[in-house]
Length: 171
Image (tube, rainbow, N blue to C red; front, side):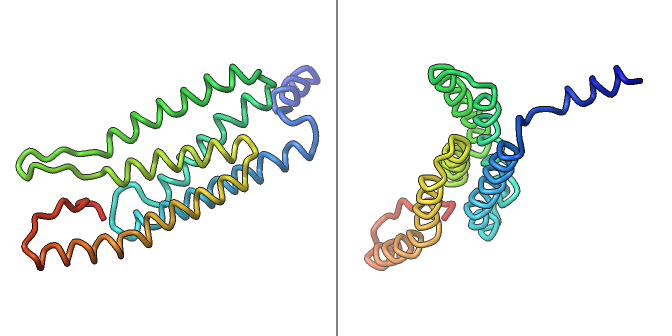
């Protein structure tokens, strides 16, 4: 029975000390918060990829960085991990883009870009670049919440003049 107890203890000994545990918890919580802030706009716009999706993408990207960092991989190996995260997120984003043949348009581009950017923020958090992650979240928030007010105003003015508009159908 003692052998089984030792095996269980060794299997659940990822953290060397309490400080390492706290760092992981804080980074994952920060990733969840920042991802959730970006997903909030998509949720309010009625898009399928909302708060939970963005939170999971951000936390997942951070975790894919945290685990290899805990294992002590080299910078060149970390570069490959980051490339893998970016490629994997690309597949998820591609699934959110729909091309409509009947209307000759696409939808889901803003959501896909938001998911992609959310993954980048998760990578920043996972690398311990929290200030950069917060700054990027604020900039993305401006793009998602503030820019649409200006673009709608411009589209209305163009429509009043009878010009053809190339609006983003997602906004």
